[in-house]
Length: 377
Ligand code: CAA
Image (cartoon, rainbow, N blue to C red; front, side, top):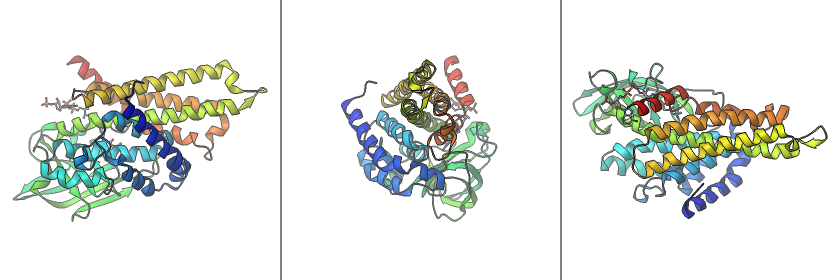
C-alpha cells in the first residue's frame, strides 16, 4: 500500500506501542470485561484520541489515513480498545468539530482530542437502529432551554464518557426532518446511565443505555442547525464507517498473523500444516481479503481527506472489511483447530469481536442499501 513517509512512520509508532503495551494485556481486558482506562490514558498521551483533528483543537493534526491506521493497528491486538477509540474519535468528536460553533469547538473538542475526557454518541433507540430516523426521544424548547426526554441503547462509552452528542426529535416535521443534535455533559440533572450490556465480544468496551428525564439544557447546547440533525449524523456516520472498516481490517490482519504463526507450529501427519496445499490456499485467500479491505478503507479515508463525498466508498469499505473479517477469523480458527476454540488462546476473541463489525454503525444490509442508493442516484 502506497503510504507517505509520515503515514509509514506513524504506523511504526502505533505498532510499537501496541506490541509493547496492548497485546500483552488484550486477553485479560476481555476476560475481565474491564474498560482499559490505563491504555486509553496512554493513547491519550500519544495523541491517538484525536489523531485527525488540528493541533489548535488538541489533536495530532494528522490525516484520516493515519487515523485508520491507528484503529487498524489497535484492533489488530484488541478490538475492545479499537472500538473505544473509534467511537470517541469519529462519533463523539466529529459532529462537534464538523457542526459546532467556534465556541462549542473550543470548549469541547480539546479535552476530548487530548484524551482527558471520553466522548459518546447517542443515536440508537430500540425502534431506531437501522431506521435511524424513527427517533422517539424528544427535545422541547422552553425559553432559553431545551427539555429532553427519552432514552438511547447500545451506546459505546456511555458510562465512561463526560461529553455526549445525542439526537432528539425537536419539532413537528415528519420523519428525518424534525431531528436535532445536542451536546450533553456528565452530571447534568436528568441524564442517567442505565444498564451496562454484557456482550458476545468486545467485552472490554463500555456499552450501556442512556436515559433523559426532564433533562434541561441551555439553548446553546443545540449542535448544528435545528431540524438538520439527521443529515448531520448521516455525515458523521460516513466517517464512522471508515472507523469500523479499519477495526474489521485490524481484527482480520490480527487473525491472519495468528493463522500464519500457527500453521508453522502445528504439526499433523508428521509435518507443519503450512506444507499442505489446503492450508496454503486458505492463507492466500485470507491475505487477499485483508489486502482488498485495506485498499477500500484507505481509499475512503483518502477521499475524506481530499474533501470529496465518500458516502458510497465508506459504506463499501465497512461492508467489505467486516464481511472479510468474518471470513478470515473463521478460516483462522480452522487452521488453529481445537486449540483455536479454547478461551486461553486469543483466536476465539477475534472470532467473537468481529461480529460487531457487521452490525454496528449500520448493518451489512444497511451498507448495501446506502451503496445501491448512491449508485442509482
Ligand atoms: N450525507 C448527507 N446527507 C444524507 C446522507 C449522507 N450520508 N444520507 C442521507 N442523507 C440525507 C438525504 O439526502 C435526505 O435528505 P432530504 O430529505 O433533504 O432529501 C435525508 O438525509 C434523509 O435520507 P434518507 O431518505 O436516505 O433516509 P432514510 O430514512 O431512508 O434512512 C438510512 C437512510 C441509510 C437507512 C439511515 O437511516 C441509516 O444509515 N441507518 C443506519 C443507522 C446506523 O448506522 N446506526 C448506527 C448507530 S451508531 C453505532 O452503531 C455506534 C457504535 O458504537 C457501534
